[in-house]
Figure 1 (cartoon, rainbow over the protein chains, first blue to last red):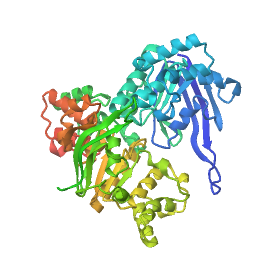
Figure 2: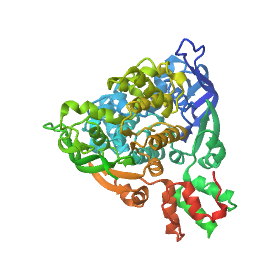
Figure 3: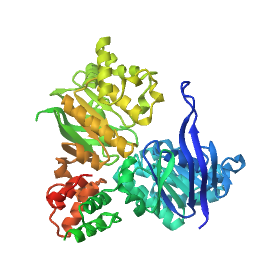
Figure 4: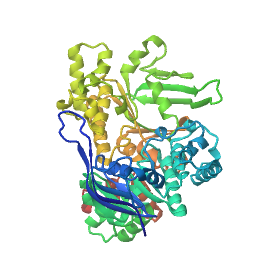
Length: 283
Length: 287
């Protein structure tokens, strides 16, 4: 697999805000991380762990204080490369209401490609395809502010898809949604990853969302604390809890059974396989 | 239990006379009981926000009546301000509403507006600050110099300082990590226990509601679609999913085990309860 994003010895400090503060707040410390093309990586961590700061380095919204970030080989510190980098990596943020710029859905989705100077016939095609990809093609002429949170967030994702990026970074994009909205957005992300081969970086607090990824990176105090498959990471129950994170109920239950002396696997992450494991052990 | 707030046949229509005319709440009736910890859940667009903005008179019903302690809150529209002091509303992401240059002034804003004497305002600021678990050392700092979680606590303290009889919070834990969420909920449980005042928690997290609320009201399509104790409401998993909601994961595991023929007794919302239900008694450890 080739490399999509390479983070090399990245350090970042936010500038000092108050006079009494001599130095700024260090948010990232010597982070090394390589995101492979076509992978689906979830980044977990408590508030202040540095996960959002890391995400914002992936398309040059923030620039390193130390170290380097390369997007498809382009250095984010090189101003000449910024446009290529922003084309390659699209970001979706937490609040759908802050990301919508137009009064009509299709115009909103067209905003990105228009700014990239895409010819208008191509824009039409890209907008239609992007709206179809997120399952919102029935809402082309609707007013975005009258849509539900999940629908708005899918419009925001369509706006990114229309720019034809290789990678999408979602920074807590489901945090403000209800369970149905979260399900819609996650299903959309999975589909884009599976069918279009888009690289996905999903920043989240929700452990059950991280299960969908093929790799989970846990951030703590500005460093990468764990990196592995969901199974490898979630079975480290005690360490996760020490970092202020919780593991899914399924893993917690299996962990309790193990502590009570039952021979159960810890890697049954979804409800049905957990129930199978518990049923097998107790009967 | 007697009711402190009664909503009778409330309808609220936005954009009357425009092509966007839409009723967010229609013919809704419910009771909020004095001293209870009530959870309200519902998908986005179910009418939750519209409903709670009626409870302290921020929105006026298109039709229907809101009673506070038996009195119609709109009987004398000029006195609606006093309703806002008695029913405190904490909005989503309340930290965006901080505006003063010190934490002390921000928390004092509400009680000052109530026309209280300076020493009473000061007493309330200190009490609210301690209720949200912040130290007096933050009082003279700018609220904007605090962390996100601290800012949210200051914003909640600003409403608590009015000492409302009913405290309503719209998704107070949104955007926080598990530890931050639990500490806000812990704070609310203590506030509820110590003051005995009514707390209404609006949330998208089924786990949160299951673990904290004494009673749950489920909204869908602008009306009440279910009501009951957490045990009663979360027993209806299929209906909850049909209205865009969910049940806690432990509840799902319990259901999956029952389908496999295992006897899992009682209502299960937490891993603790599930472990107690399925493990022989002496083996239950705590985690």
